[in-house]
Length: 312
Ligand SMILES: [Zn+2]
Image 1: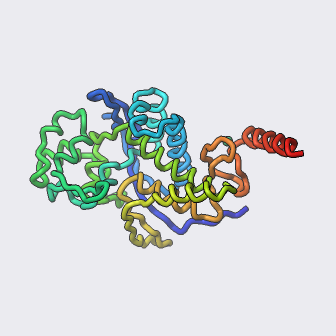
Image 2: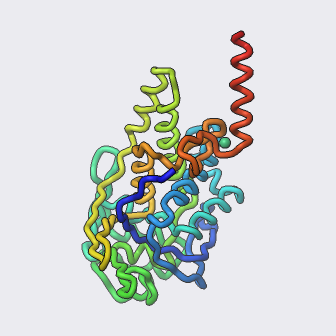
């Protein structure tokens, strides 16, 4: 079966190849290893795999019956979950949580940060916002971020070999991204689990709303899925020699995954599906397949036959 091809989408992101998980003040953080190298890649070259890998973490993170966010803090202490997050981040890079929440840009130059709170925009100083993303680095904790760029920010935070602003790769996402792609930048393992879990719940709600024959359930699933509103997304044209690309100006890897999910769910030829039996996300080789494995299909058939026999 010929699958519909994407338009020429482009969305670049940088990843370091080796990360480590460190425990600081009783919480677990993930950051690039000192001796790691970065690579810049096009998210759309791996979009399906990326979406499936992230949703898989989200499904595991939902395994606890308890819906509380605090669960993610507990899970982040367990090697099993740490391993999943580490594997994901080594493959695709950190999520870019720092830039994801911003509603203004050039936070270092302006010294001010605005984020969208629950009901209103919240304001804080650049230092107050930035420092928790550089936890464990005492030098950086001493730096003044509130009065514009300075030598310490450029040398100690951005570093000499920051992927952002590399001419050869045409990779310059603006000054805020020099923070996110710093080798000292950290993200909380619990937050990565939380993001993946929110996304899996959106995904499974859309999938379930399509399958269920119970109209009351359908309404609830759709209501939950409607709560999914990615923040502002910008794009521009990128004129290449042979092709014109639609270059998405993602503010983070999370935002990119949200867009990929939205395209997937609204495509009649959906390729990333949820297994009807076990709930795992998978890339469907055949667009009609509802199960991720032969065993799931067989088990589901057995259930179906039993149900049929009971009715007789
Ligand atoms: Zn399955």
